[in-house]
Image (cartoon, rainbow, N blue to C red):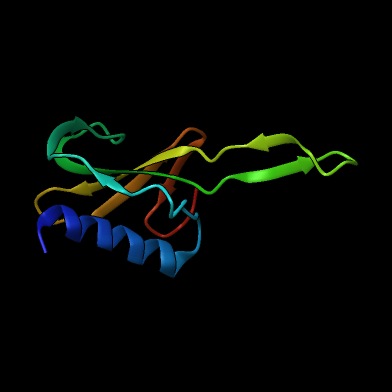
Length: 103
């Protein structure tokens, strides 16, 4: 298993264990190449970033059974330390999810 596959597997394991956020399994998790990034704590570090999309939510139907409203899932980005492969946090449109599952 290469490093990118390890990082993706680490994220899948964390998602399954914490059940804090779910991802759309029809859209593959994508691990980007290692890159130097400014982290939210102000440090600069080499990281791997895994992008994924949450499951679609809230489908509303009219009286005829036709879909009238559909909210797509949002893209999220999981950050991993490139040196240790330690999971750092998930960045999403509405903020961050910590390793412990808190927002």
